[in-house]
Image (cartoon, rainbow, N blue to C red; front, side):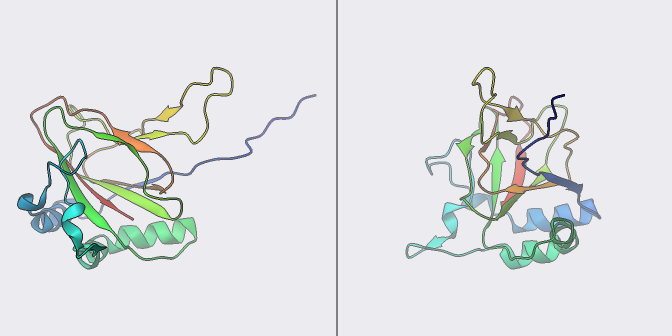
Length: 179
């Protein structure tokens, strides 16, 4: 008899933000479209690089985002049985044909994506690439999280490669990311 089990697994936690309309408004108040850099060697405008000063990174939004999403972040810490603090937060807004190339957020810790302006009828969520390939074909394994809607908040290991497909609509897709 052959016994089988998974040696490794990669967690992804998903929740919906409570009091969404109020929190969405608060999050969008933080977003300054003048800081969305379209020439930052990325394929989608974001304000990550605008948070660098004298060669150092400072987190413009960490205190506010931590306060706005306190309940959801606390739930994640409790569920994952970890503690921590936010050290980076930024917005990304994809217009027509804009996407984010495959990347990761470093080799340790957790990252999050909050879908702030997101229409599940026309947008696709963040896609994740397995850290190992299909053992039979050698092909990459991608994961498309199910049931993503505006207000979804997902947490995942920072080391996992992820990306977004091109926005095929004229409706902007706005997300908040944080580590």
